[in-house]
Each structure stands twice: as C-alpha cells, then as structure tokens.
Image (cartoon, rainbow, N blue to C red; front, top):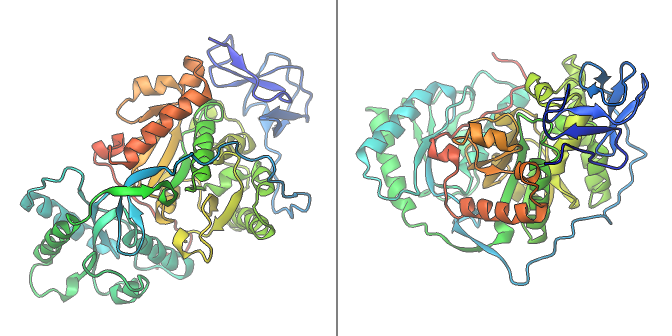
Length: 491
C-alpha cells in the first residue's frame, strides 16, 4: 500500500495514507521546509499560512497553520472559464430509472405517506396518527412507509424565519417522493393552515389533505388516521415506470469529514455529478460556508455572467451573515474535522467542493427555493444557499427537489433527511466499524488501490439501485428527519 499521496504537483504537503512516525493516517506533513508566514499548498491552492517555521517531514495541523480567509470580497479578478469541463458524454442510448410519475409532472423515487405538522404544537398528534395508522393498516406494500416529521417551528417567528419555515414545509408537501401527504395544523398558529395552503398553488386534493385539530369536533387523531388510510389506498395507484434519467435530481453533501474526504469520497461524488449532468440530470451542491476558500474555482465555472454574479452574492451574503453575528468567516472545522486531519476552512472547502465535479455551474438557488420554480429549467450543477449543518443542509437539498442525497463522511453518522440519504465512507476502516451506517465504501481507492473508473461504475450501480427502490441503511433503521434553518427572534 502506498504510504502517502501528494495530491497536486504544486503541493508543499502530502497526506499520510497510513500511520507514519509522528503522522496519523489522513494528516499532512511538510514536503519541504515552510517558513513562518508562508502559504501552505494542498490541492494546488493555499490552505492557510504557517504560524511558525515548519521543517520538512513535520506534521502540519491546526497547531502550526491558520486561515488566510478575509471578509467580503469583490472577486473582480475572477474570470469565467468553462473550457475545462467534464469529459463524460451522454450515453449512446438514453438512460432511465424506475420512478413514480406524479400528477404535477414531477417524478418520485419513493411512494411514502407523509404526515407534516404546520406547527410544533401538533408534533405529538402527528406521531399518534402515524402510530395508530400503522397498527390499523395491513401494509402489504413493503416499498411504502408512513412517516411524520416533527419540528419546533410554525409559530412565534418573525420575518425571514417565518417565511423559511413556510417555504421548507411547502417544499416538503410538494415533494414527489411522497405518494400522499397529510398536513396537520393546530388552528391558532402564525403559520395559518389556510394561508399556508395558498402557497401550494393548484394542487391535487386526493394527493394532499389537510386536518386542522382545533376544528375537529371529535378526536382529531382518529380523524387523521382515517385520512392516512385514504391516502394509503390512493397511493397504491402510483406505479414505478421507466423515466428518463434527466428527471433525476441528486443532492451533494458531506459531514464528519477527515483527511481522506478530498482524496476518495468527495472526488467520487464529483465524478458521479459530472456523469449525471452529462446524461441530462441535475445535482445540487450546498454548504456555503464550506465553499469559503474554494469559491473562486466554482465562480470560474459559472455558465453565464448572471450565474457568476449570483455566485458572488451567494458567498458574500453568507459572509455577511457571519459578520452580522460577530463571528469570523474562517472558523469552521469541527473538533472531529481537526482530529481527522483537516486544519483550516480553506482545506475543508477545497476538499468539500470536489463533490461538484468539473461541470459548469448553471444556476444558484436561494434557501427554500425549488428547482421547478426556476424561470429556466436548466439541468446540470446548481449551488444552493444553506449552512454547513448536516441536517439543515440536507433538508434544504431535499426541499429544493432532490429525490436523493449523497452524503460523504469520514467520521460516520446515522442521520438521514426526509429523502433517502446514501452514506459514502471516505475510508474503509469506517465501513468495518459502522456497517449499519454506511452504504458504500469509497476508501478502496486507498486501501485497495482501486482505480476511480472502476469505483465510479460500482457507485453508479449502487446509487441506481437505491433510486430504483433499494433501501439505504438509514431507511432500514427507519431514520427520517428534517431541520429548518433558524436565524431570528423567537417571540
């Protein structure tokens, strides 16, 4: 097995692929003497500067390197250049997947029944409705489950917080992965059910139903159970059919990253993103704070001047969010990141953004915005405004219209958002230790010296199996969660 890797010819550090004397696996060491104040180069770009002199062969980590990141920038020096793009081409015959066509033209990869509260006050009612419906229904369709999604919001919120809650809940109600949705309101909340209903537009009233608990004369749980039974029966009418791959939308996310993330799993997702975009599909990259330090690479790939300007606003608006709260823009790597070998936000970002591959960036989405709200429905790679928090960002990806989220991790996590969340390990040891969490091992690039081409073929098969109905590990464990971004006053 190779002992270390120099990722880019310009790099002044290498990454240990196994434990070396004084250098844990996944961590960096200096390839030459680095002077105090000198930039440290990884992925061919600066990842910060040395806070003291570093000798050749010495460990390079958060104790002797710090960020170069600054605040708001104008990015005048960034020029678009989309000539160096993915080498993938469309398949000789159009590719398909097995999906559920919906009346509004969308396509789902699951056919579940969702119970969604408009306000946190009715979380318990939603739970009881789901539990009793499961008890009373004889569920013969193993590919159809009944789920509810508790949250703390929908009341006592103002301004953007209130609208963010309404938008994310609207996006869930309109999501194609659900074969039927029951929206449960209380009746006195800020997020008034009848006003919320207007956000849905002209919707299918057999597919989406409402229940307002305060307006039910008798026991509201039994009323909800009856609606769920009706939705369940209606959902049986939806059948999987062959759908062009251009209808597939996939979210790209990482969490619990380590020193292998930018070498194995993230480049794998980048290759998959390029492949899917070449077939006419769509991918979405988010975690804006984890673009800081690598944003110039994404800006150069903007498909138009408008996309470039929108990307600049995406980055600077998020930096402004940090500054308005009195927080530095470069303070991001978590204790787990640092323990895994990531020292600065630039280093994290340069590894994180590899999930977006090399395809042109064709669009930028606001938080809570859905892909089919775009005036132009350009398929391809999009950027989405959301923080780095795993569940908040993954929820935002699903809310934007992704039927599936691909999630790379070096430390491991059991979570899932409200759409299937396929976990990709950056190292094979994690797969050995947490097989109940991990769906795919990308660490074989290092542990078995597997070529990327071979790994990508296996990964495409794995992803398409999940798209076509195979359960992820989190689905098998009945883990389905959601989280809404909060940034304001609670009344």
